[in-house]
Length: 626
Image (tube, rainbow, N blue to C red; front, side):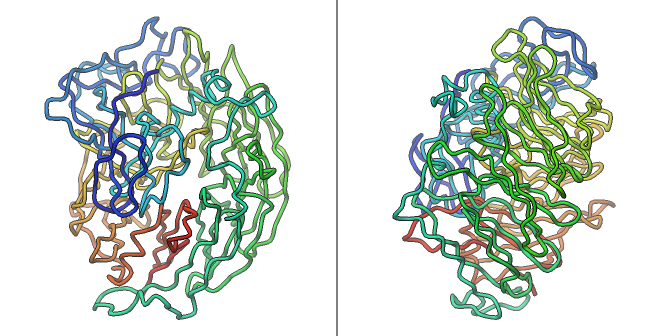
């Protein structure tokens, strides 16, 4: 697969700025990439689940696969590359324009959703989220475009766009070229870790706990001069010291009156009301390398950490934690799979009481309460290997790579019984297409990319795995996802919400107001849209109580805000639930790869990665409320 043309990256909140490929973004004014890419002149490619690849399809398929690359998008086959854009080149927006439909799609008369061959990639350059990009998450790593690592640039700071990283994962792990692409030796599973996973710099390995600023303390005067109607900063925590190379700070879980956050080698718990220590912090022997983004019904999570400090350490140590008490539960070591299937990196997902631990070509399921091993998911059929999993609300979805490196190479989506691993249905994906993200597993909404054709697709499915619809909206969208290089991270997206009938996506914007578009899952068409109430972009957070909760980004002279939008009826106007204070806008705007949540009438934001820069004072987490 070849790399598409360069394009500028995009990131958190700051103003856009151009940047040559490979350069690190400036700390004060990093660049950004926009929506989905300029629209080419040819009709869009179409969706991707149509006929299966060259062999007869597995159950749930759509007919035999073509011998040559198909001519449709999304789940369907790719379309020949389009000519130059109709307008002058510009930073391609995050996903690429979903253009007007053309010929019948892979499902009979259904037209394809968008899929012109986009410019640098289906979404644009990678961007980790809010705040200053202190440095790329993995210095020197291959660039990961939002729809796949198609760009080759580090992340920027301004508008938040989707980063879909499965294309690199497919190259490094699934495509049978792990050793050739990543180096290493067979003892390490044939994979070499990214720079961010290298051994710590002993000069920067302190593990100080975050500074407490709860209990009414406000040492930085963030609440000074609060205006009428503004909420207040309830508390905020400075980040712990981390190596100069930076460290991950994955996950954020709000349960009852406790907010829990992982960072580097520790797990912290704060009281939601005043930020006082609820328990811990709990220290782990080595770096935290993966967490369950979800929590179980009884507030259990699992974190994974490295088995050593060297550059060949594996992410194979599991520790269960109780979010309410901080008590450590069971622990386990993830065994390696076969050749090219080590636990160098793992992904964790929860579905009911089942914890699925995904290696590069297999998965192992555990009981979340006891740690008992339930089953393994391994190679099936002629040459199909599990590549990634997504879970939630009692559903477990597996994406498999089949026939890697052969003329019959393709992917398949399966739903599994979480308790037993039994396959409920199989849906083959057309050749050349990769399932890079799941926006939701219930209902199932997936985002796909075709790196060779530089196209993308969003498709939805019924409970039994039958194709339901493809998004058909002529718009530039910009949800927000994390880096995914050595793994696929199907559930790594924020800034997108789904309920039983609608998909909510934010349109792209530079520094001005954008819109959230409500797209029907039944036909893929836009049903309504709502504009940001101020001249700043906003993004969906969740749907609860019949209302869409959205976060409006802060500006240099105003704090962010949380708004609600009725999802039913004829009126879809925003109502402000919380207006953050202007005095905290500067700090609110600096959370790198920000993780956000709205719970109990309070707004929480935390960093997803820490820079390790001793010259800057990073915040780990903040809470706003009345």
